[in-house]
Image 1 (tube, one colour):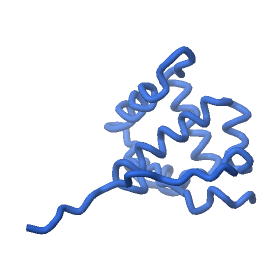
Image 2 (image 1 turned 90 degrees about the vertical axis):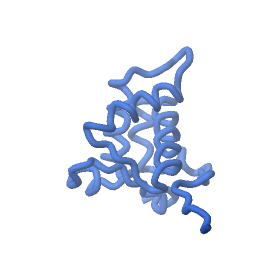
Image 3 (image 1 turned 30 degrees about the horizontal axis):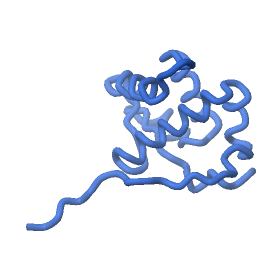
Length: 120
């Protein structure tokens, strides 16, 4: 019997230049540490699921927002509304594919990790 094909990744790299990335700047200025937490949690969901995208359709959106909120629970836990706003800002900043998010009926959040490290 063949070994089943594994979906998702066991880990993903994060470069320390994330904090100086111009695409990440707006989210950090607007939401501070919350942007970092939401972004990392969303990458965890994305890479741990299908490997490079997350279905953010109306059917799945609440589950994703609650999972992120659960990841960030504690003294300064964000509201669902703030998490949703951060995600919209990350997409608008092109840290996720704008085309896949806006033009796909499932509102896919597709990672653009290959562009994390350019500072353009």
